[in-house]
Image (cartoon, rainbow, N blue to C red; front, side, top):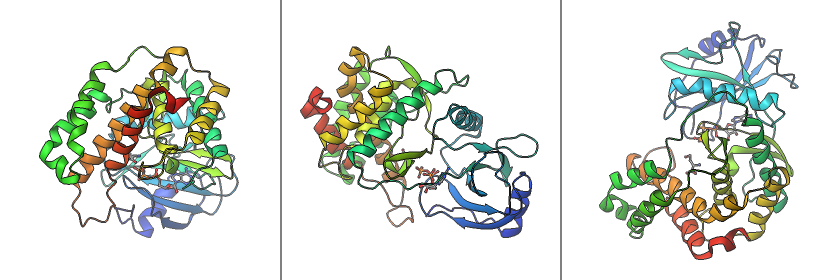
Length: 327
Ligand SMILES: Nc1ncnc2c1ncn2[C@@H]1O[C@H](COP(=O)(O)OP(=O)(O)OP(=O)(O)O)[C@@H](O)[C@H]1O
Ligand SMILES: N[C@@H](CCO)C(=O)O
């Protein structure tokens, strides 16, 4: 499920006519994703200036979480990274040059379609390629003129868990409230002086398109913000190097990811030293948002709730292994 809004054929055709991409040929709702409505659009002709083959696009209607005021940052970032040869989709601008339009009070954007599929059981070669792509993205974003604060830092994540409250957390899982004191400790000891850039901050396998071992697209930049680059590597490590439920850590994937990253951008000693804490902070980030979503999403809703315990298990592993998780 990820088409929340029914846009009739005539309205879609009128919307597509605002872009220099030819006429609407087909529009199919995309099942993946939970935040926004997405359609795969085919048109009769032009590629919207992307230079890509064929005339396929992703149309996104922003439904929740995303502030319209942040859209120029996200969409300009895609254009900046794409121009710097990162595998990132470009934004198609309409005939007036605008990167997004409003339909019934909701923002919509037309995005370059990139080929590829998201791995469900990544290999070490794929993890290495993602490390390379992440480091290239960090390097390319250094001179991006836009900026956006991270509104999901450890302080905010800790406050989110506190506001859920012990009782509600324990109804999700009896072990969940145990993370509250850990969360406070992380927020208090969080570093702030590590090298920064614009970071993706949600680079899960489902946000990476791959053709075999090659990264063909990094997508879903809607949590991107200015933050410490090693934190982004830690998020990606937590997202890629465990079984889905977090019960099994695969050190070979972790090594491949970090090796790939360092082949482009070697980590400073202090970044390496901070990785275990940053990885715990990454777990806190996803435990907090998943717990909040769990409480706010009715059990019978069409959207599948993500289990916060998947990231409590990862968190336990990082606490147990410390620096060894990054050896
Ligand atoms: N530029 C693109 N090229 C090709 N496919 C894309 C592109 N952008 C998105 N997709 C497809 O659409 C699906 C949904 O996109 P996305 O993950 O951005 O959904 P979302 O609801 O916005 O995000 P999320 O569920 O992560 O909050 C992806 O899994 C992918 O299959
Ligand atoms: N990638 C996140 C969702 C976006 O915050 C998760 O798996 O919890």
